Length: 201
Image (cartoon, rainbow, N blue to C red; front, side, top):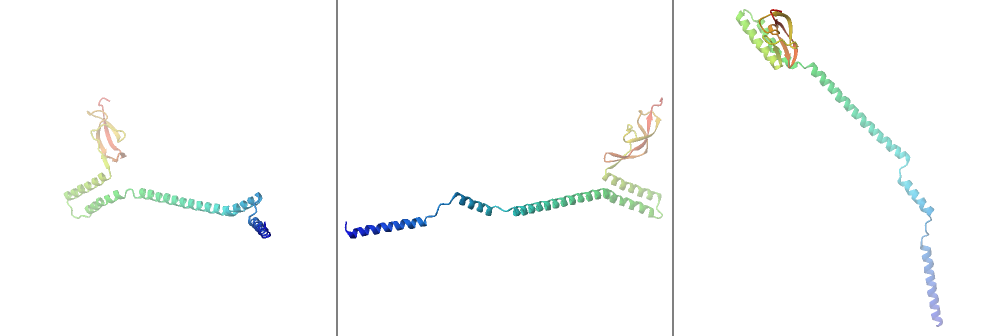
């Protein structure tokens, strides 16, 4: 090998050694386990909210729940109050329709009293018409009369004033001294009656 060739080989070796040194310098040093753990801890600390933030969030949620409860309670109170007013009005004005229907009857009676020089027949005719008006009002209100003459005595609907000997079957209503009245199926006034009993009794 000539001297020139030897110099060329030596230069080549020096270049390779220099490149290896550069690569070693550029290559990052491996992280130690302690460094990796420290970095993960720092990342976790940055991503997780602190205690103060969690406390504020919990307080906000609690306030929202309390406000929602207050609104629901207020609404329930309003519904209850409206219901009480409705019930009170229903009791207070329960007879409004019945009272309105009675007004024409009163008007007819007042007109009859105001009539001058009315004959007895005219007064009687006016009273009969007024009675028909009143009966129509009673029918509309489901107010029915009890006139049990000739019926079997019913202690739930009739009130016996006396018992009289009669040819009729015992416990039969002989006379009706005062009519009774039913409102729907409820007795609001029993009929006052006399009841038959055996002549031999």
